Length: 195
Length: 195
DNA sequence: GTCTATAGGGCGATAGAC
DNA sequence: GTCTATCGCCCTATAGAC
Image 1 (tube, rainbow over the protein chains, first blue to last red):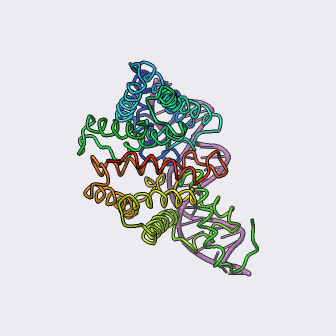
Image 2: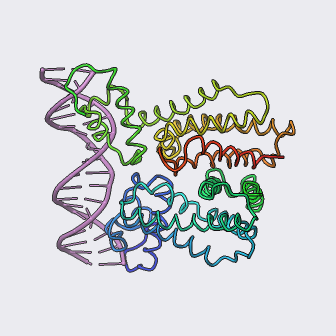
Image 3: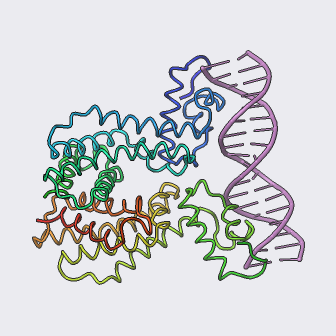
């Protein structure tokens, strides 16, 4: 893990972020010290401060970049035309994106309370944008008669919680393949909004 | 908040637990100091150690007592005979119990990673017991032909995640009454398992 | 039962050498 | 770009007085 002294800006920067994300996700922001991060990266503590002004900003940048990547990836996704196709696209996208980034996902919803109020507001706004994409699909689908949606906000939150819960029990190489999970959850989601 | 010195074992013990639960839930176990807890209770730091051997045990006791209370309360609940009645009883019970104890609920699933491995195993076993109560209802309901259950374990986890998600957005006195929430979620749950 | 003082250690962040 | 030493502070847990 340790490296010799010298110039490694292109390596150290990303390495700090990867290590911090892993340690924060595993032990929690407050329980991880800058010294631990530095040791795992293989640099001295002082070197961390060449890449982040402080620990709080390190956490915030990880969370903001994750949320931005999530929103950008959804924007770039082929969604189809019908409400049914869009709902299926959202569920598949969500499961795929989140199953590939367990640490980032864990961070983004477990460490909200360790953000300063200003930083929290930023992340919360990004999260709300993402939720609204699903809510819009549900609302439009209902207006088109494709879905039965009693309360769009509640169903949005219920579906997102249901999907987010996958990370609690999913393990790579476990009993269920990713495809199987996608199939099962797609069916559950369809049932909750079928007319 | 501060109290005069003297004997208050009957008051201080519960007060420490209430304060610790509130602070742990709000800021996270690692971010809360014994000094903060003592100050909020109105005693010196040393007094805390008359009621708990250490900080870790304080956290563990809060979580274990919450899970035990949850399991006991479910045992004492009138569940009805049919699978449909039992499922409805579970959903109503879960929402009621959890909406009344937001701090304990938050703790019980956000602070798992701050438990020692031994303590974690205990809490995890209690949680699994609770999940199994729902899974049994689903499995028996399927065998009786009352439910369509593709994969009992997955649907159990999906439903519990959906219900647990209520605490993310629920606020006392918010847009939706408790009754309305119960009605909406009961309908969602019924839909996911209807034959 | 509670207080105060303290032991012993870790923390975030910075300064100055290389 | 990185290291090491260090400042000033806070931490958990305990000891001894009352």
